[in-house]
Image 1 (cartoon, rainbow, N blue to C red):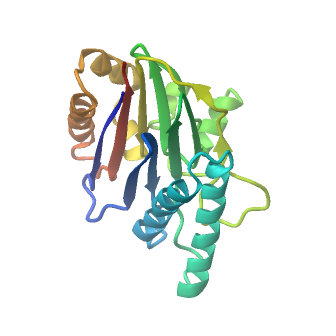
Image 2: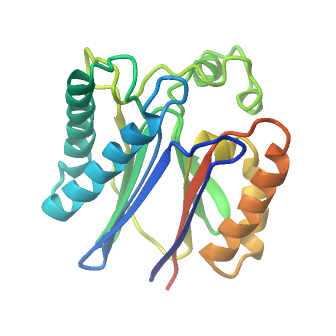
Length: 242
């Protein structure tokens, strides 16, 4: 049984440039979340194009092994085309993370620093790795993982949709079998930077539903971001339970 909940809030900003999409097709699901890049202009339009592309392709290519790659490639092409039409080559950029649950498998893909976390039996198993300067510094051993959240280059992204590509920039995880008591969290950086993974696990263990889990996390995100010009924050919580 799959259940889910979602939230999307402007934080302490005037507008919300995040977008989310939840699509069901024959009891399978596609969850998409995008964070338009603030400061570049038209971030809200870019994120909406990205999640709408995921929704459209899921409905038309449900069950196709190439769904995720087609989704990212098409969203990229649509953003570049929109940039040409609006003469806005410096705008219309966004992150994107997509989770697909189909049959007895799941898989996800991402670009940028919007994340997909996977928890098994309330313990974090894996997460997507940010396409950002701090994440690169972690990978080469210059900083620790827990230093990403407050690093001065936290917002410097190395890969996004809407920037010209020489080679494929998004990452796709391999399909994995679903099992009982899997939990997923898709979220923008405005969410994860204000709540640590250990706290996600603690609140997951005490929650009775994805709505409760997401609600208690969102309260902490709101509280921890208060007075900091907190960014937009969005998240989708997904549970698989027998």
